[in-house]
Image (cartoon, rainbow, N blue to C red; front, side, top):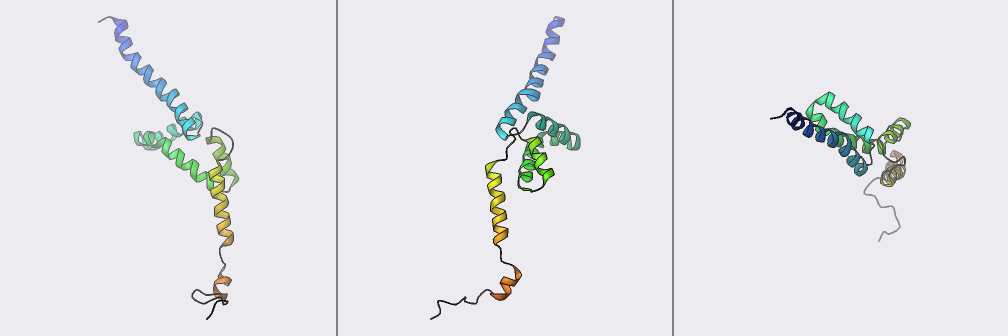
Length: 129
């Protein structure tokens, strides 16, 4: 076999795999998951260095979990980290709605004084027969 064919047999698939793994997949995953290409590549490097091949396989799902967890945390550092991960700079409307719902529920929870003043099982009055 000629030398250039031997080189093409090794370099061809390697080049295709490198382009797909380092360019196409991060762009496609980033658009679908609302993550930047840089965040996906950095997540891949970090998780692969920590857990090896399993970290590389799980890097995008773990980054997605991190993104969703940071969405509901009301802290300036969490918001800046989320802005670095996201493709667009705005927060998801669903995450903001979930945060508002959680805040509304926690604001409407009765305090201990309310439970002592009106224990469960006692009528509040009004419809006694």
